[in-house]
Amino acid sequence: MRTIIYTKYGAPEVLKIKEVEKPKPRDNEVLIKIYATTVTATECTFRKGKPLFSRLFTGITKPKNTTLGEELAGEIVETGKDIKLFSIGDQIFGISGTNFGAYAEYICLPEDGVITLKPANISYKEAASSCDGILTALPFLRDKGNIKSGQKVLINGASGSVGAAAVQIAKYYEAEVTGVCGTSNLQMVKNLGADNVIDYTKEDFTKSGVTYDIIFDTVGKLTFSLCKNSLKQKGIFLEAAIGLAIIPTVLWNSISNKLYDGKKIKIAATGLRPAPEKIKDLILLKKLMESGRIKPVIDRVYPFEQIVEAHRYVDKGHKKGNVAIVMEGNNGD
Ligand SMILES: NC(=O)c1ccc[n+]([C@@H]2O[C@H](COP(=O)([O-])OP(=O)(O)OC[C@H]3O[C@@H](n4cnc5c(N)ncnc54)[C@H](OP(=O)(O)O)[C@@H]3O)[C@@H](O)[C@H]2O)c1
Image (cartoon, rainbow, N blue to C red; front, top):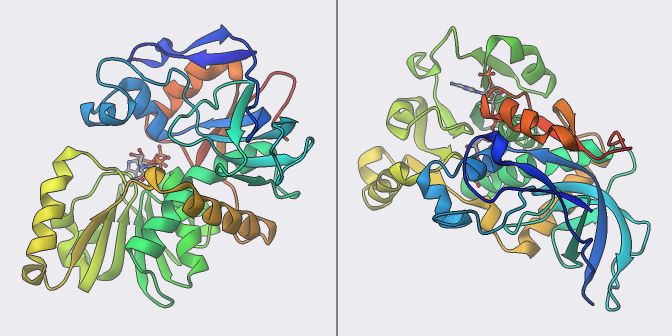
């Protein structure tokens, strides 16, 4: 089968297509023929090995796992002898987890991995493209932000993968949502359900005097100190794009919270959550897509062979929602 490997950190050109042996499922594994995967901002970070902090997860001098790719959708084509939950022919979607490996024609995953049946009304490429954003936005807003109906929630970077998911999740929790994005994305963010939109190229919301219960910076463009005055008393600042530089602020805030009027900064590495928690959220995502509450957002679709071009595009930091990768002879539908 064909897979995409990288053996050193660097520009998109480090990604190479390679022929390898098709994997064989163990007794507790299913073999999935992948029809769609994606290129996420996090995978671009892991490909570059920058910031250096990211290498704590991927290997200090070179990548430990040479095949990237986390989100996937496809069909089960073989099952190990102990498999009870899935059958050959099942159409599934989910994430491969911290071992990655979805930039490939086939992958073996345990049946208790983060996979479930794909909604019938959603294509493979839409299903794959929805996982990372929602499985990040849900634990941030629900678990770290304790989001409640009627709260005022601001999502910065509302047009990105995590941001577009966060707008929809915040609306699911019946919050009043303000989406901050660039001029060309204002209508898209409104269509996702945002009650208000702010164009960050024209207006600085931190100077407007309006205060929020939650400010979720999905793209690492804000800081807690910049947003403090835009938080209500006991308001929460959430940051998805984490690096070493933010850790002292988080630690200082946790020990001196009273100094900040009870305002908190919270971070999370949602990909490191235990699989059972992620499976529950994946099943919720499936239900929300089936009922039309969550709309997948796809910006561009690239064939497998154009993975380098896809990474170049995502590296620019301006994708709208998600970038899907589809396999040869298949358009991800
Ligand atoms: N902590 C975790 O567990 C976790 C999990 C998943 C992802 N992440 C991280 O979350 C971050 C976001 O990921 P993503 O996939 O959502 O990124 P993304 O889709 O690549 O973000 C691109 C979007 O950011 C917007 N943007 C760029 N500059 C902006 C600015 N100054 N203000 C507001 N919006 C701006 C762009 O809109 P314009 O084109 O209009 O500029 C574009 O739509 C990444 O750092 C990723 O590694 C963290």
